[in-house]
Length: 91
Image (cartoon, rainbow, N blue to C red; front, side, top):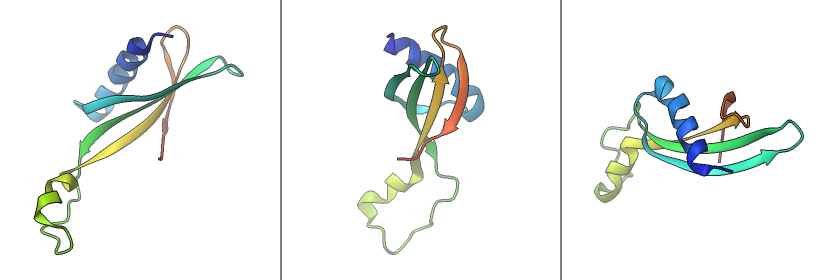
């Protein structure tokens, strides 16, 4: 298993779809022997396109945390490092 290879393959596949991905993380890699593929879960930060403007319930010290949100994606990758599927992933 080459974790760096999974990281690079996933990032190269997602950047054309989402633009430059920020704080890209390899979260999980697991082999599915039944179908011969690797399930790879990654996450990255995306700018929040619908931020709440000055919400009264958010303290000023954490207001910046709502400018971005973490996106999780699951990819199925074969042994040749080809992406065979891209899926939504919820935590």
